[in-house]
Image (cartoon, rainbow, N blue to C red):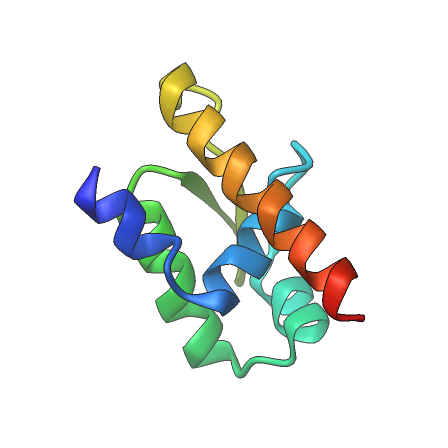
Length: 95
């Protein structure tokens, strides 16, 4: 659990999770563009999420694509859902 909490403690990683949590696959280039991060920074963040078991990666030629881990235990998925929902609500309140 500590590795998962550490992984979602970073705002960029939470934003990346929000994008991949839709069930689709997203390449690093898309995540970089949408989050305003460099390739090396985005790759490091995604590595943390992958090592925590939250996302899976797939190499597609020169691209690496990430998606939500479909085998994530339900209780962990519920924690991530709750954190992402709270993040969205907080951002709406601040805006």
